[in-house]
Image (cartoon, rainbow, N blue to C red; front, top):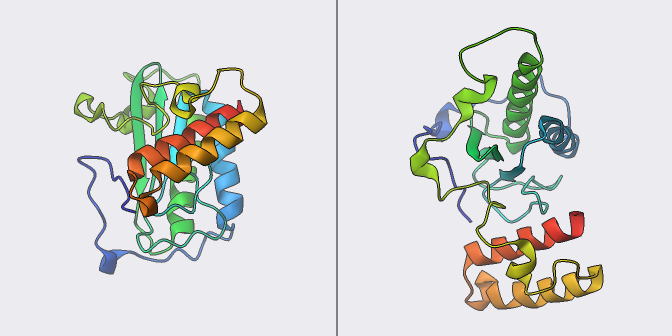
Length: 194
């Protein structure tokens, strides 16, 4: 699985990636903090991305994720505008996620200061209009319940059963499409978390 790096964002060559010995938090603790930060931002939707399937329904990596590509992308939508921040400066996924967490936290904290600026603090992360199709993963044109083929108020067991069937038919190992499979995984997460 390839990491969907935002268009126009430069990648750090692997030989130039540097370890960070200052971060002591685990990947699991870092992703938990990042989810909290994104929830505090009160955006319409958000999603993390790594270069393999070892991720939670919100796209944040599992505590044991160790993809070949250590890059990390955080995407979100707020008031209809798309944003993304990405980091691959370290050869370790944990450090790249931590860098993104620190940037999001520091930027969010700046937005709480009584200082006026010409644009939002997150303006640097705003994606250009040409990136409209690369929305935050969960920003599909189809509601989650339609992706799974269930009623909007379906009980948990029906959601899980429908998701299991859809994942089986869309799984890339079974000849399915990886993007469609990911939409099913995301839809299941949206319905079970909601």
